[in-house]
Amino acid sequence: MKGISKMNEVTIITSRSAHKQKLKEVWKYREIITFLSWKDIIVRYKQTVLGVLWAILQPVVSMIIMTFVFGELANMPSEAGVPYAIMVYSGLLSWNFFSSAFTGVSNSLVSNGNMLKKIYFPRLTLPISSVVTAFIDFAISFIVFIVIMLIYRFVPPIRILLLPCFIFLAFITALGFGLFFSAMNVKYRDIKYIVPMIIQFGMYLSPVAYTSSVIPDSLKLLYSINPLVGVIEGFRWCIIPSAEIYIPALIMSILISIIGLVLGVRFFTKFEDTFADLM
Image (cartoon, rainbow, N blue to C red):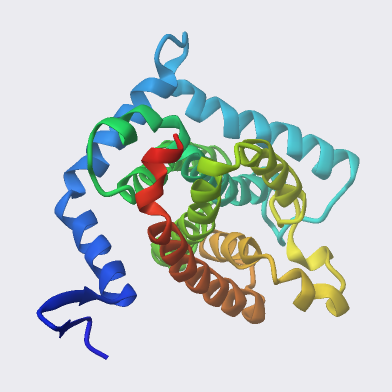
């Protein structure tokens, strides 16, 4: 079916054509994404004593706590021959990127409500810019990780060159599912209380402070429904020589993330024209 058809000289735009048009608009206004991303960074660290250093302190403090609690007290296993701190930090990198991006996308419309009511621009640029902002924090945290690897004299394998693939997978996972919550958050403000709960429980249901090897084989497939399992284990596989990927988890992560992104974009664009009225 063609995207545009004519009936009695009236142009009818089908839903599929409308979605494509929205995406073309995002590309046309792509400079707005850069502007909004830097605005978010400035607002986040404005009037803070440490500023951008918070992007360094948060993952480092989390690594220290998790290494002590799970590595020392609970005696959870690490990857063979790998310091527990490196194993934990590799998981925190991917998890923090996802959680920061997912939270930012979910709140992107509500936090920019005044802008939505005053001017027109593609609404999709707001959630996308939130993921870009999270990526900037991720880049800072990754530099810290390089320093930690130097301290431990840890040398990653050559497959670390594949890390951008899993960064992109985390990107589309956070964006796809975040789009559902950002659209619903405009009408149902309870969403802002639900998102932190999802993040809190999701962290313990994902292999951040532990590896998937502690999960019984009978439950691994069910456990892999969580798309973050494949993402986090993929990060570790790229960074740690002895790490292995549970292939079904990776396949499910890719499929769920792509489906979530497609449905998320469709859901978001379906209600996009109502956002300004509901603010």
